Length: 154
Image 1 (cartoon, rainbow, N blue to C red):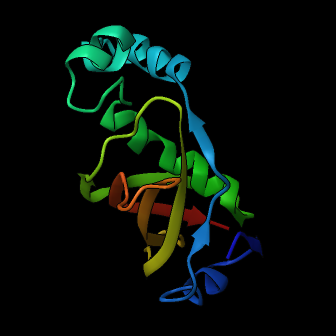
Image 2 (image 1 turned 30 degrees about the horizontal axis):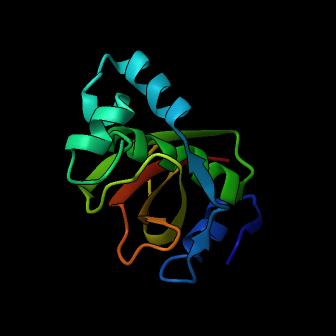
């Protein structure tokens, strides 16, 4: 599925459990974004920000994105992929995050989101656990797999 048509209530979210995954549009992770992430986080490890050295010395043949940069794409890709018309949405956390393959600079990634579980919250919201796989175009295995937990208030 490439997107959901206007989810407007908790019942519609609950109905998605175990259903078809939602697949985001492809997104390019370029060196400019990697450098900006390094500036924002203070993580200037050469494998990310020194393309020449990374080509010479890294086992990946060039610079790669920070794992946490890859992870940080998930919320925005979810919101661009699944149309949840809510009063308020919150990121609640992550479970079982793994960086299973490097994301070389210039790679095009996309995310696959599947609703694994929903739970009603005492304050009237609904908590959703999403199984997420971030894949690289042309790669055999995902770059990142995680459970992403969100809370929604309609």
